[in-house]
Length: 114
Length: 267
Image (cartoon, rainbow over all chains, first blue to last red; front, side, top):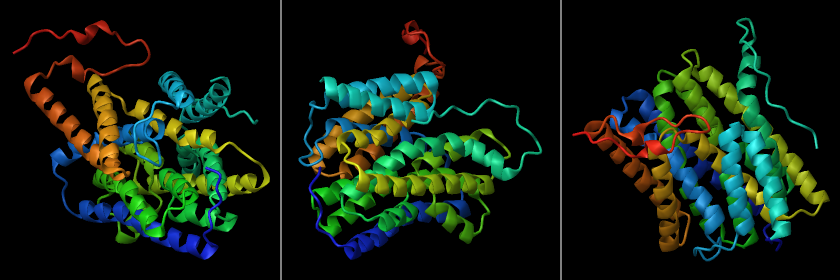
């Protein structure tokens, strides 16, 4: 993770501009379309399940998928344990800040022990 | 370390100015953006971004996931096109988020929708969706203010993180976990009934399989679409066939009864 990238600031700038378009259009187009015409009921019912599916997928990617080879890995034990801690803390406190900070402290301490 | 206390519970004051009542709604999110924003700024600095560009990327893209992805892909020297493509697939989920908000933003001008779309992201979506669904007085104006508060805190923490990154040496693997913790928190907040837990498990397995098959984060998009469809299908079927099914029972706070899983026969 610590190799320094050789890109220039100009290249970074273009990356940001292109990134802006791919980030902006998916947010804007559906908003434009669906505020003008009716969304079918089934679509809303379907959309209810999108956030939870997506966030789970992202967590699985962070914890169990190797970012270079895209293979399954079970070596990130501190992260796995800290994830369980975060779930419990989030369930009990329902506070975003406490959950994130406990998670960070947890993974820091666990990676020193394990 | 400065201690952050949750907002004291107060009776809403009817004369409270709008900027303060919306700030109060946005504050828990703003505060949690500080550690994540700092982490993101540190990672972007390590990837070679200067402080000015770090500020720009957090204003223009404003997505923790996307910015962490940029930082990671730059450190493994991916080509520009492949980073942009990955961003596209990662950001595609916003199409689903903004469609689900659109019923609440009917009749707004195109200019408003444009500004609203720019500062929409996962976390302020979660807050605004909840407020729109539960608070009748919540309108696009308030929602936009929440977005702007979170944008402000996000950009500031990113810039400060970038400055910290240039001054200190920090373990990036640990910093990266801030985002994972945030997603975990949001999953827990989304869980309303037993069925949602099942969908989580399905989604997790599908995500792993799809990413191994596609060898890219495109797998995330595919697995999200499939598992949300499965959830939609299961819920519709259960509602129709077994309206009293325990799978649709609401999960209450800590200590929900486990024994209620055995369902009574019903035809």
